[in-house]
Amino acid sequence: MDSQSEKEAFLKKILFNKGIIIKICNSYCKNKADREDLAQEITYQLWKSESRFNEDYSFTTWMYRIALNVAISFYRKGKITQSTFSNLDNESEMIYIPDDTDELEEKITLLQQFISELKELDKALMILYLESKTYAEIAEIVGVTETNTATRISRIKEKLKKSFSSINK
Amino acid sequence: MEDIELKNIWQSYDQKIEEARLLNLQSWAIHLRCFETLQFERTKSKLASLSLFKGFAVLLGIIWVLFLGLLVYGNQFSNPYFAISVSMIMLFSIVAVFAYIKNIILIKSINYDDTINETQQKLVSLQKSTFQYTRILWLQLPFHTTWCWHSKWIVFSSLKFWLIPFPITLFFLFLAIYLYKNIRMENMHKKWVRALMMSGPEYKSVLKAQECMKEIETLKKEIA
Image (spheres, rainbow over the protein chains, first blue to last red):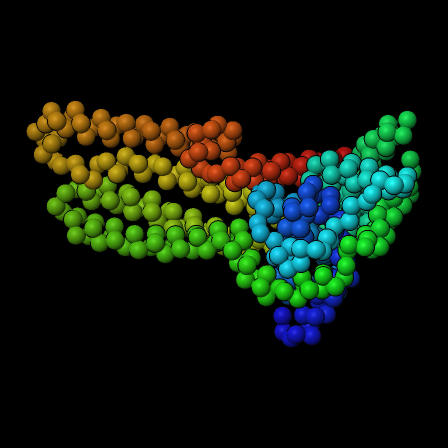
């Protein structure tokens, strides 16, 4: 990074879109320590890849691509390292876990649970779909055709809907 | 349940994240500002340390090859068995050095802003090439037992030679061929293959990388 102000601006962008990191961490990791470690790794990889970011493209698409790539490939090694985040501020909790107090929160928990049970790639596809990314954008992030993406997503959706309706019965 | 309802639930999840009391912006800002420290810490991360380790191994490998070259040069006429054995060990060492250089280039080319497909493919090929070269290296085993052979043992048909060094070499020859044939990705479920090739977490990583590639391949073939 060239200057301090550029760095600050980039960090602010990450901060503004931190929800992406949180949702991916929640979908890919079950326990708090793992989520924090993954969040740290994703943020670090984003920061490291900043020089390669092309301003012509969407920042969030780029962020999703890195975050999902890290979540799928790096973190699967299953090794928890000491987290700088948690060392810095043990009081802070960056992951939101809903309380089961109302119906909506119950649905959120269920959706989170269903997503976390999906295979790694399906998880990525579903998160991107729920984030209202177009099939073209999803295909670009994953590196496959739009048709394949659309077909797979429709299959995952069917599975999700079935799981929801079986619970609601 | 309609698509829109699924998306609405996800949207509410988004809002909840924003509202979450514990998710304070200030702590995130502090975390993000500590990247210099983080970067230093992360140089110890897995891929980075792997590349560092391989770099060190390349350096040692080059020194080792030069040393073997000197040995061959100094003994090329005095004992052909020594010269041939050490030359073969040197050849395998050169293969290993090139394999490590290739791996370092591959590690350096892994960018997380490539498509998921590309990144996964690179990770799998990194693991595959490590596997491939390691199994080739086992083939040098018998040459480690022949460098001390001497022509007169064979010319005079020494009984000691046929009873001790020759069976040992024969044993290592079969062992090398057996290992070469059996150390392959498909046999990774066998305990002894894993014991020779990798630790537990690495094995999991290889398996998951393969799983993910299979998923991508299936997705590519998906027909509406």
